[in-house]
Image 1 (cartoon, rainbow, N blue to C red):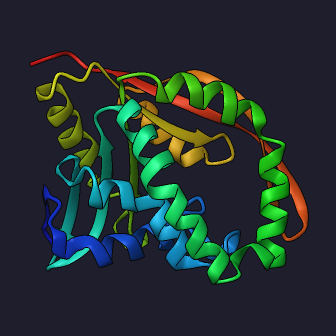
Image 2 (image 1 turned 30 degrees about the horizontal axis):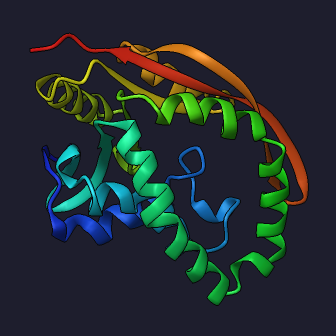
Length: 219
């Protein structure tokens, strides 16, 4: 096994991080399984962290290759404001120009999203009006089971503690059993659960979106 190094994110990591994020976005599989536009997905999933709060992201490298990342946010309220006012408008304009909303796969996805009103208007309101933090993590398939994820989360937790953040959250849907086991092993516990709908290949998938929370002791 090659030595894996954890370090803070650098600007030159941006392209590789975006690629890896899309490679593992669907329960460890590619984003194209349910969303056909990789560039738009990368903007939606990573742009806040790489462009507005890069100091809270850490990456794992093996022989110079980016094999893992943890995107962190230390203030959910700030995240919500940036996403709503600064990121969403240009993303929508870009999507319309590229005709993304006219693709059948996207229309199916949007129909499913409309059924997720509870998560959008209840959970999101309470989460993004708080000053707790959150994280997203991705590990390359060939580097899983090598403690890369554990080391990335530990690094972010230490950083959050030093920043005075009392809680970190992570969202996982219950069909992703491996992710749930992973977060529980890192000391996260389920605090909230909401029913969710995802449309894939024209069929609705019903599951629950789980909010995992880890309480952090201040340094």
